[in-house]
Amino acid sequence: MKVLVTVKRVIDPYVKVRVKSDGSGVETANVKMTMNPFCEIAVEQAVRMKEAGVVSEIVAVSIGAPQCQETLRTAMAMGVDRGILVETEVDVQPLAVAKVMKAIVAKESPKLVIMGKQAIDDDSNQSGQMLAALLGWPQAAFISKIEINGDNADVTREIDGGLEKIAIRLPAVVTADLRLNEPRYVTLPNIMKAKKKPLEVVKPDALGVDVAPRLTTLKVEEPAKRGAGVKVADVKELVAKLKNEAKII
Ligand code: AMP
Image 1 (tube, rainbow, N blue to C red):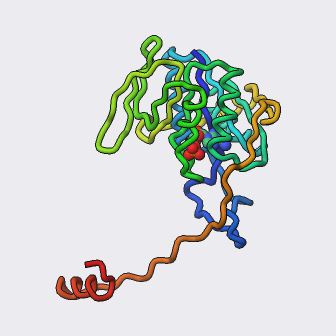
Image 2: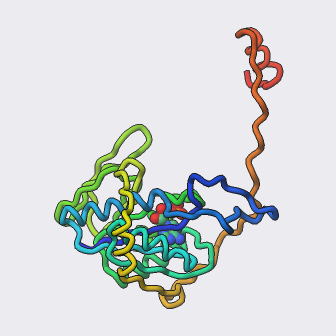
Image 3: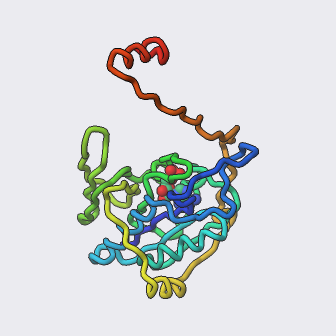
C-alpha cells in the first residue's frame, strides 16, 4: 500500500514571529524555517506503518519555494522513500494545495493520504478536508490513532468533548493531530542516506493546476500589547475594579 504525506515548510515554532514593517505579512527573510509540526507527525505515522509492514512506499510532497527541498530531505531522513517538490513562489492557499494534491494523487494512486491537521503559519485547517472533497474520498480529520484493516482504516478522531472512533473505506484522506505519535529525531547517518533518495521537481503548470491566490490579505498587525497587571488588597477592591473600571460585571 502506497501512502502520500504532505510536508509544509513553516517558520520554526520557537522563533518569535515579526510582522513586516509595511503590514503585508510576516517576515520570513533570514528566519529559521522547519517542517510544520503536524506534518512531522504525519510523516512519523507513515514511517511507523511501513516499519509494521502495512505500508510499502511513502512519498512526501511539498509545495513551495526551492528551499522546501530541505523539508523533503528531512522527511526522507525520517524514513520517507522519495519526495516531490511542486515548485512555486506563490504563497499557496488551502484550495491550491488541495488541487495540487488531487493532481499528484492522480499520478501516484496512493491508498492513503496523511496530512497535518493544520499548518502553524496560516492555521487554516482546510487543505485535507478540501482534498477529500475534490477527490470524493472518505476523510477523517484530527486523528489520534489509525489501524488498517483490509480495505478500511479504523481511526480515532479528537473531537470536542472526547474521542470518536470511525471506520473509513480506503482510499482516504486523514489529518494528523498532536496525540497520534511523537516524531523521531533524525540521525546523521539517515540524513546522509536521505541525500541519495529520489526527489522530483514539478511546476504546478505541468500538473495543470492554477495556484493563484483567491484570497487577499489586507493587513497583518501585531496583537495589542497587554498592560501591566495590578495587585488588589482584597475581594472588595477586585469587585469594585471589575464593576467600575473593567465594566465586565
Ligand atoms: P492548512 O489547511 O493550511 O492548515 O494545512 C493543513 C495541512 O496541509 C498541513 O499540515 C500540510 O500537511 C498540508 N499543506 C498545507 N500547505 C502545504 C504546502 N505548501 N506544502 C505541503 N503541504 C501543505
